[in-house]
Image 1: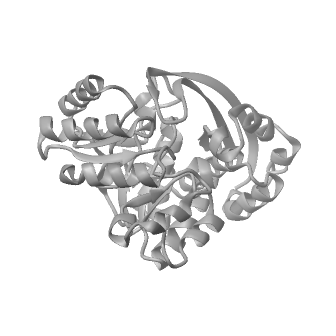
Image 2: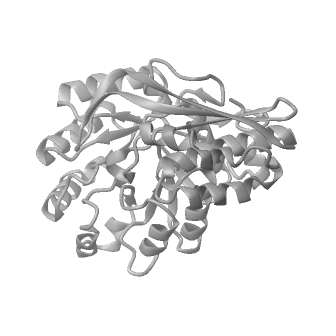
Image 3: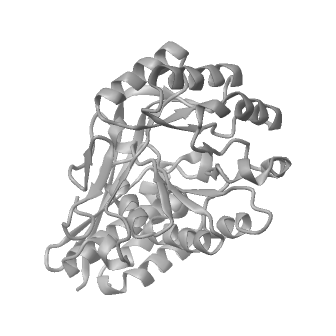
Length: 352
């Protein structure tokens, strides 16, 4: 079954509310949308929102790449060879994971629709549902507690709290959350590279009673070596994020002694579903748990990440709330969300 058309566009998607992390404040985002049409009329959908500060590619560059002659070379090709087509796009656009992710996701969707099965079934499904965390950006204690109440009312049981600007205020926010809500919430923390060794030690010591489940990317890229100053009992609850971009970096952090006990996989860092599964396979051999994350993204790419996550036996955590922040989106459906629990439909492809 041949590919007959490839269409791409870009759209500015507003967030329901701005949020702040250790490196920036976000109010909206640009997302790139791509459709791959087959000769029988099947359309596979892909989307990308790469973070330029993490991977060096922005949405405008992604769109230019998707409208280039290199992508047009996929016209007339057989969708059944989609793995080879992904290789060709990766070779044409090295170091451009947003471009690769958009094409990878659309090819997977078209192939799954052609077979009439969900992508998770193609790779083998290990999980059927899992609670996602919902993210609270950096804000004062009162704002943190107010937003937590909103998520509690919506049925969520897992919070991911952004930290990294002021460790003393970070500590107070976590302690007040636990004081207010007891054991109702599981609490995760994402420092977004905001701590040095002294701040990490202070945060861990002062929040121990709050039972933080994990800490995502506590130190800047390039400073990972300082984590070895901490015992493995603490490092095993650190999740590599900005330090983990692709399978090569997954290999780097899989060597002993381990700096991280968890890998945060984002399709926008590693170039889509296939790149994500390459990281997952490396992590499995090193006994590293998987934590699936996202940027602010369309339902399309969030759903793709969920298919990949549910195809991996060592997926332990998901943080796939990126589309929930959007005031508008390209599409609907894809996944089911009820009381903070995510599951997939049985629709073919990605089901979007």
